[in-house]
Figure (cartoon, rainbow, N blue to C red):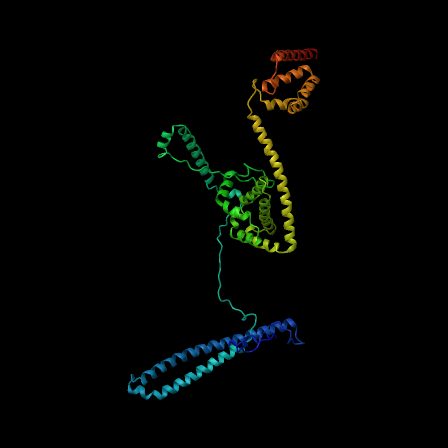
Length: 454
C-alpha cells in the first residue's frame, strides 16, 4: 500500500488533500500473503476492489434516486409553507401547518443523512490506477484520405513558365518596335512620348536542372517545365529554408511546410543551389545550403528505412539528431557532401569554359578560303599547332622545314585559306590542288594494277 507523505489538510489554501492519503495498487507487495501465489493474490485484490466499488456505486445510484424524489417532495412542502405564512392558502391548508413542518424536517434529516453517506463513500474510497485520472475532453482528428504526392513526375505544371516566356517575347517585340522610334528627331519623340506604350519589365525564368547543371545524384524523371513552375511558385519558401542555421527553426519550417520542402523538385533545387553558390564563389552560403540539403536527404533515407512517408519522420529525425553520436555522424556526412560539391563545381567550370570556347570557335569568322581557323588549327600536327600558338616565327619555320614539303605546303594552304597565315607570295602555294589530284590519280591507278594482278 503506497501512502503519500502529505498533510491531511492544508490550512494555507483551505483545500483538503485527504484523497491523496491512500493510493491502492493491485500489485503492491507490502501485504502479500505468504501462502498465496503472488499473481493470484494480485488478481484477487483487484477483483475484490472492483466488486466493492461496484456495490458502492450501486448504493450511491440508489441514494441519488431516493434523494431526488425526497427533494422534489421537500420543495413542494416548502412552497406550501410559504403560501400559508403569506396568508394565501385556505383555512384547511393552515390546519396542516404543523404536519407540513414535521414532514419537511423529517425529509431534510433523511436527505442530509444520505448525503453524508455518499460523502463517506467517496472519502473512504482509495485512489487507484482506474480512477486516479479521468478524461475531461476528447478530440479525434481524421486526416484527409487524399495525400499530396512528393514525386516530381506527379507535379502538374501550372503554366507559369510558359506565361513568363510569352511575356518575355512580348517585351522584346515591344522593345524592337520601339527601337526605330528612338532614332527620330527630338521633337517627334517628345510628341510621341505621350502615347507611347511602355514595355513590361523583362522577367527572367528560372532554369531547370536539365538546362543548367548536371548534379551527381539529381533525378531526371521530371520535365524542365514542371520544375520551373514548382520553383516559381515556392521560391520564397525554398530560399528561406536554404539559409536557416538553427536546427529548431529548420524543424519548425519543415514540419509546417513538409509537402513543399520534402518534394522531389525541392531537393533538386537544393542540390542545384549548392552547386551554383560554389561556382559563384559564395562558399559561406553554399555551406548553409549543403547542410539544409542533407537534412532533406536524411529524412528521405529514414523514411525508406522505416517504410514510412518522409513527412512522418520529420520529428523522429530531429529527435535522433539531439543525440551526440547521431549529430556528429550527420555533421561528418555534411562535410563529405560539401567536398563533392566543391569538386563538382571545379569540373563544371571546366566544362562550361570548354563549351563556351567551342561556341566561340564555331562562331568565328571564316577565312578567305572559307575555312574555320579554329577547325584548321585543330587539324594540324601537334608540333605545328604549338608553333602557331607560341607565335614564334623561327620555331614555325623550323617545324615546317622538318616536315615533308608536300605536307607542309598542304598545311600552309589551309592556314592561308582560314586566315591563320598571310602568305607574302601566294603564288608559292599555287598548283597544290593539281598536285593533289595527280597524287589521287596515281593512287587509284596503283590500286587498279594491284586488282588486275590479283
